[in-house]
Length: 261
Image (cartoon, rainbow, N blue to C red; front, side, top):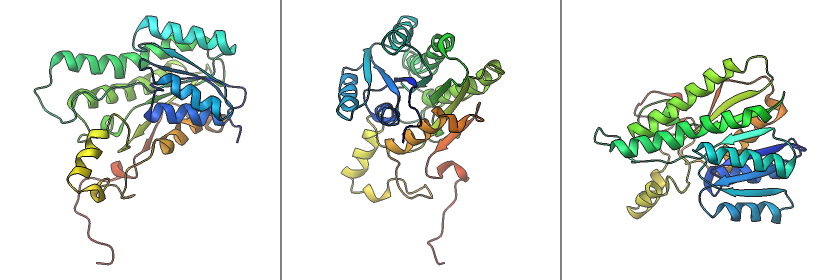
């Protein structure tokens, strides 16, 4: 499949997890990809793309700063000649449990990385995105419903959804689209402690038990949603949130009966 052939994409938070999966899939579908992260493992993502015959380069920087986003956009244009897609994916979790005792400094850092960072990236990329350009941000089900993250994390993702909706209106008539994906429970470095704790207690079989899908998701499944929103197949979709959560957010909490009863 070459749905993204000839396009140039920037993926932030590309050192692993959802960002790496999105970078790999967009490269597989024909895009040249600039992988961005402050972690050195972003170089490994480029190596994986190159090993599969794709085109990629890397920038190791903090993409929640004006300097960082300016550097990544400049390098994408310099290396590949244009910019068509921005996947603003970089994020941090902060505390894993909700509570009212979150440290204000940590709260501010979560907002800086998860909310201000994508906005800075959007602002830096927009002058280079022509008609048909696509912006995808990584939100979360925690930004849609309570109960999936801490106050800081949930607030940052809810704010990000608002940024998507509001920016879509600002971009009216430009031909540039902006959407969000909202993953549910997916095993990444960010959620690894939850998975490890469940396995240590012998409760691995209960992971994802609240989802109609009855399992956790894979980064590659979220990447499919990102690649779709980045493609021309999604040309009439903007200002939307595509939830990828195995059905978790489709219902209010209830105690399901076993099948057949």
